Image (cartoon, rainbow, N blue to C red; front, side, top):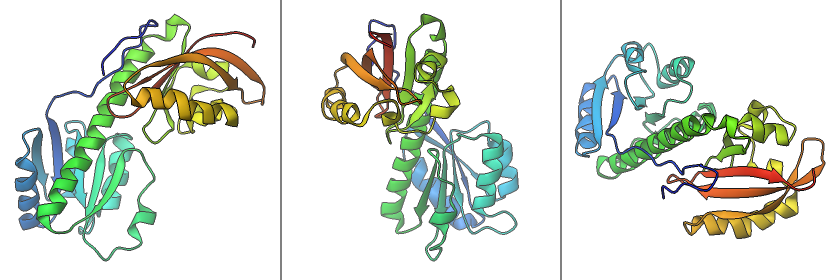
Length: 255
């Protein structure tokens, strides 16, 4: 879907450009095996590194990092932390062997981080490739949407992008101010934050179902401010290729 609605909002699509993946593992044999499997996919370009510290030099050059956990000197979580200091939203897959039952609790809860346990290569590598694609496609879609929507700040419309998991990942100033928030206050919050419970239920069962069927939805909505007051607004909802949503508030009837 790559339509432009009457407000000029284009439903962004993920880039078809190849995905550059950096695989980090101190075990050269497993590293070569992982690189060989991922390299079989035409859309993946694979780099390898056995030294986690050296891998940091490639942070700005790759689309995703796949790192083993159990490495001497700098383990996978420490590498993840160092990467996040430089690139907070770079897709990162922590790829680890079994026997680390505590690890899921220690992996930061992030849209851009996933944990995958090593297993039979014939099945695990295809799962790894899908995880990498999903993270990178979503990353590209969100960044395309941000660039497009940031340029539209002057339109006067309130615009927000909602992640496939249902939380705001981008909110422009107009949208946030209509609800009494700063943009950063809404990022990470569920989209239902801005609507009364009954209205959220109605949108989920009608508007979002329409969007899932590859249509845009337009209609009046009851909106909820941070002070608990309500107002009505004309709202458009469109879908992006990765399952994200774009909310566009164009006017209000009785604020």
